[in-house]
Length: 468
Image 1 (cartoon, rainbow, N blue to C red):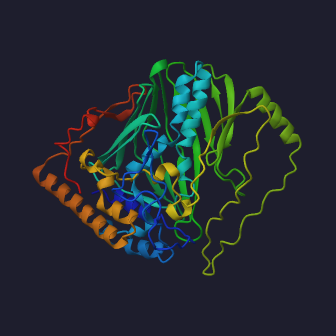
Image 2 (image 1 turned 135 degrees about the vertical axis):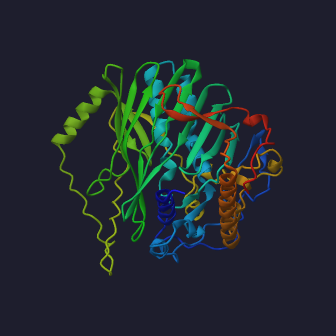
Image 3 (image 1 turned 30 degrees about the vertical axis):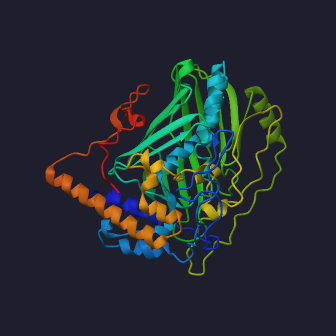
């Protein structure tokens, strides 16, 4: 096993500490959504749960440094991270959160003009990272061969993902519109870097969206995500880097700049960019925040506004927050002062706005309403799911139900079972065989990718591995 991979695995888990997490009642929630309960239907539409079976517990008693100290001079594979740093979801389920704003894909498919379609696709690419705002819990690492499916008739899609590699960790996914209007697929392999006070996740892997009616394919890569104050101070997240969305039929490109927060946090959460044609002529300007909303406007109107703004810019810069100074001399990265809502330029067009989170979101790991439903296990669902589905993982289910001791024990058992299976394959010189995806080349970029092999929804699960 690769030592560097294991170091980053351990650091990633340790990095998900939360300072000053709200303490909540340890009693069970009386909201909709107990495992095994089928939610009621209204007008033939399946209703989904609105809360978790048990509220989030306090993490304030856990010290990240006490965990990191154990890594010094020891074999990292022997270090077991406390389940306290997790949230009750698998990383495969977290990928599925891309689909929360799938209405933007449906809207893109209905647009007659390529420029309007690109606007919707750009908004969808930004919306895909919106659920990460204030989400400081670490999702469970998927076991090799683990899967997750989601069918949402009300939202018009179905989705399947599989953990296709453990070292390096690679998650592949595929989604299709129930009305044959789109395909959405890709593979995710984040490269982690530990900088002492922060952990940076650089995205690897291509994301592809195909609008079948228009015979168009768009590809892009997500921005870099950085988690600050993994040792001391209040933990906070920023996204930065340039995302380029390419329309492979027309040659149009959308260039989006996710701004780093800057010295005084003035640029925190900001996204700015433009759509250009194949000759690099700017056709449309885009601006907003990935935590809030996205707007667009004609380039001439945008430049005119910016010129007036520069002439009349007398705003004072906010001072950095010094409340994070520590008595022992260590200094945390100051949490940027969140700026006011996006300043809308007259004549702008709203492209996307984030969904309002449920009022009890802080007690549910800051989940969105969409996220709350992802691990829901309805009555009878066990008979139709693949035996490798995340919903059947006992450690995640235990944590969701508030049984932390059971969750911790099951997590340790599953990890040991995975190691034992790897040892047996090594002894037999057998290679792992993926079930629903295969290695290949992205049909639009030519880059290495994992492609859906088909057949999952025919539900022949006879060759699925025993991983739980």
